[in-house]
Image (cartoon, rainbow, N blue to C red; front, side, top):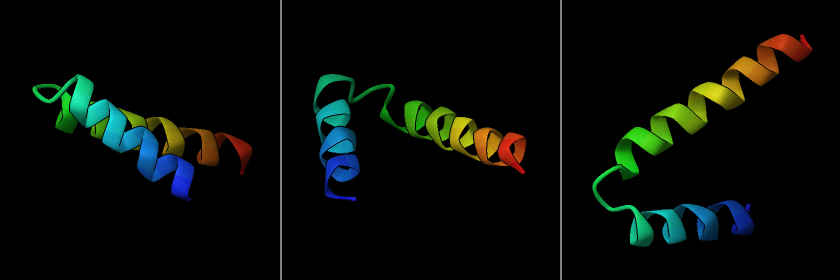
Amino acid sequence: MVVVMFFFHFASQKFPSDYNTFVVKFIREVKNGEHKRL
């Protein structure tokens, strides 16, 4: 969990303007992956 938080922090520092969009896309990818597994 710490690695994920660090990853998001790094992403927000490197891409502050696209941070929100990036998080939304990342969450959608994770949810899609979970649905595919099920």
